[in-house]
Length: 242
Image (cartoon, rainbow, N blue to C red; front, side):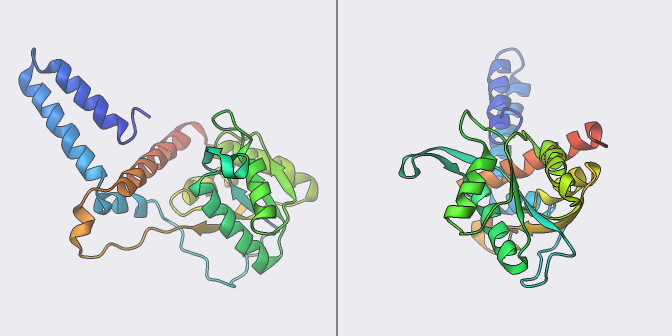
């Protein structure tokens, strides 16, 4: 969290404060840099540029089928630790968005669903929460539930292990558009043949003053985009094959 927005800017500011007495010019420079960086990361304009640059795969047209896929794989994301109206933990916004599109794709194609995601923050596995939501909230059956993957790489490896006994290799892969390139690379390296089925695309910006006004939503998008760029770099260095 300390190397992602907004944490990285507070770390930079703290270093600047520590240097103010001994190296005032450097200290002031770091403080100004932290303030400017925080402002930029909080604007829809910058957040949009960071997110859209990650979206390498186009949206699938409604009713276009699943490209010969034999199953649908929905990747888990975040969770809400406390959802008392649901009796405990529940899916977070990102996970719900993926579940919704996975349910839509299932209704269009009739393909069986696999959900994947391990335990986060000491609550039930994301895979368990995904399966429960898809079946109770969206009314679609889930055939395979993977409950141990801690990251995208493990999503891919463990999904292959579940699908292999049924001879399934080509899968429609459901995740966010900004996350899809890394997910596709991981699934290919794990020995599967993913058909991208991305969801939630960042809209093209308009010539509007709101694009340069800071917002919490834009800061969150910058956080997600930075996390994804770092994830891509890490996977390129350390995850080249099974």
